[in-house]
Image 1 (cartoon, rainbow, N blue to C red):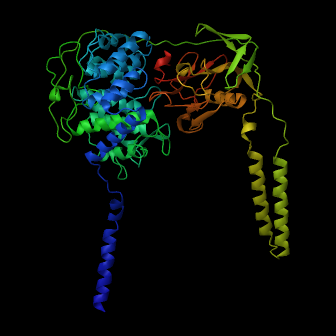
Image 2: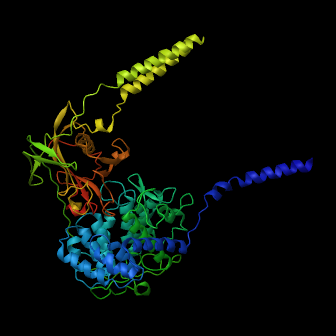
Image 3: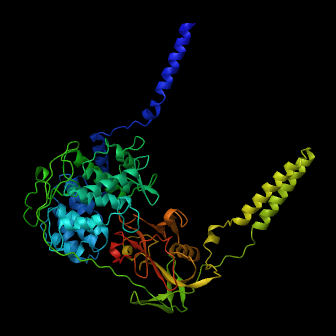
Length: 620
């Protein structure tokens, strides 16, 4: 008997002792091997070779990648260069031809093309020539890409790597991140900024402290599946940018607890978007996405370079500097130009080198602000088969924009739906009738306590209240073709929706030939109306599809417009999506926060370069 009691006690003690360990065992991190990452890389390459019909990587480089230079294949070319493929002569020639025949107005685009030439081993003067006219000209990303070029040993009269680094540090936000606008850091922008700062980590305590804060920002925002989300949308690209960033710092995400959540690391966060054919989707359960695939590709390559003790992804092995290497800069295996602030091996700290004395120069930044007033008059418009509205008749004058645009104040609407009697009286009658039947049943069954009838009355009243407070409408009724009636009008604004940057680049039926989805159209506003309110009104009135995440009433008014007219973010590259301007200015506020005033002019524009291809002027 005693032995049985002792056995029971020991067994119980063992169970209680083991219980705390069970969650840890369930969340144990399954470490990825280098071979597994190589398989992910190989799967992407095999997919692309099959997609373009190439029999080898060399054939891919000489064919599809060369043909897409300047438009769609530049990141593949750069990544293959960092994998050891040095013959990018066909791509180099094609990119130079593209640049000679196209006026590239976007500063960040010029900088990325310069990096492409650098990766191809080009000695073109274009790489250095564009720096003065590009660095700092279009927001934080033009500083970031400019620093990448300087990190590769190129110079220009007006900027040095040190001065550009100082400018980037001055833009760091209170939460430790960076963003294109607003007061809160963005995952993608922060990770891309860290990638540029990584080679300069040991230059000064200011740099290392700023990067450490950014790493904490990225760590805190990692999700339980190891991935990241942007504007509430989990996606592969954000996680790929973080993997590229931490790899540039010599951080191995497989072993660093800051980037392991619930047993999942960054590689898990990206791998969950992998498709059976080896490509990657933008969202879970989505289809093939080019941007997600190429970013997954170069992030895995960046990781592998880190494990091999090589330089970060964008400190380019194949570069051929247009000038002599800077004194005191020695690269790992002759590959590094500029100072290296990250570990020289995957798990061991390495010695760092310092940059040469900075080239003196002056940095000038300018920002313009404008305030517009305008007048509108009546006109007419017609709607095309693609949903684009064209107009005739009247004009809006804007002093701020120094231009005249035609305004629609009344348009030919979709055929008005026949009026339908409200469903609410009928629904209320059903509720009342049902309550009466239930009351009769209760009475017949002898359950005649007054409490039963009080409860039934309350339930019926609640159901009626729900009916009165809700408005159920079919899609046809939602897209009514009728402008919203407003009782307390305080003024008029105009809004237009355009996608000029992608007109002619796709055969999609949703992209008008002239890029105009909604011509400038007048809308009445009431006190407190926001840019988001007017976009919603336009969608309802003119049958324009709009997809958004968040809401104007959520934290920080975080409304993010992911698609308009079935044209979505990332459809035309990793930096593509919708942005809005008011009176020619890019606001630092979300569209759900921007309260409109009489005479404001709203533009919704599709960008392929996070707004930098639109010659934006940012709100101070």
